[in-house]
Image: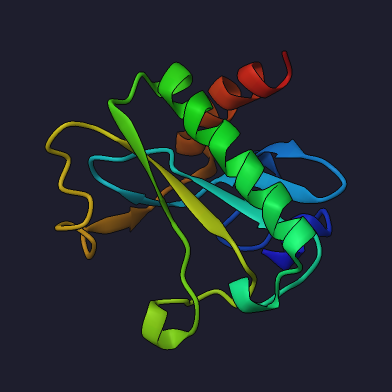
Length: 141
């Protein structure tokens, strides 16, 4: 994640996955997909903070405000039935990347996202590109 913020590819994520960046946050399509919820988004602060605990309130507010905009954009761009957000802290909280980030998932009726937690795959940048384009169209308005 830190590599993406610095303008580098950060395997398996690529600069081409980014659909939004400003002075405070970066948002991109995750390379890790669950079969019924393709194209989920990760929102990260550009400043390195390890977890929610370390995130200054003003930065946390910026991230969460943008997460809301992403959820609304997913409804428009993907025509999903709903959205879910997730954020993990520490190993016991399932944190596996040591840079604070929030996941925003498109949700569909009976998609079983949480039941299928272990049923994921890594995607190619080509697979992610249509989702990047849809969200860029919304955020570049």
